[in-house]
Amino acid sequence: MTTALDSGDITKIGVGATIAIVVIGLILGMIITALVARVIILVIVVALGVFIWQQRAVIQDHVNKCELNMTFFGVHLDAPDSVVKACHERGK
Picture 1 (cartoon, helix red, strand yellow):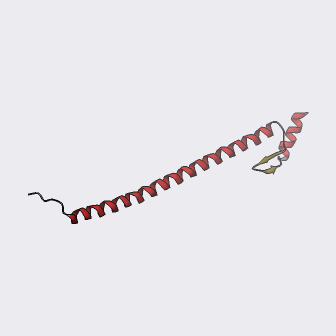
Picture 2 (spheres, rainbow, N blue to C red; picture 1 turned 135 degrees about the vertical axis):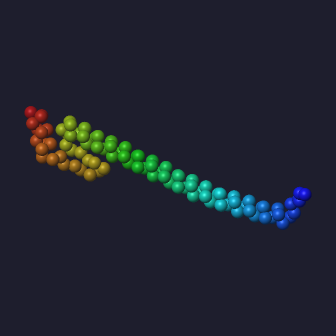
Picture 3 (cartoon, rainbow, N blue to C red; picture 1 turned 45 degrees about the vertical axis):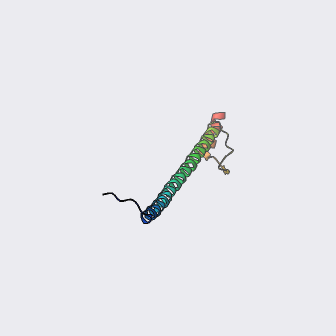
């Protein structure tokens, strides 16, 4: 014999469904927040890596051309004496 749902059962199902939706929403919110944060951190780290690599390449290019007036992240760099000497000898 089957029984129909009464109003008390419908209320219990409604409360249970509401609680389940809230819990699922909170869990998804935490997962998405963590994922977005990780993606943002990844983008920042990759961008900094590319910027540092580019700065390093510029410094190396300056040294190869004996242009010893250079900066790295806005800090003036002085070439070692051995590099200055090698540039002067190569220029003669």
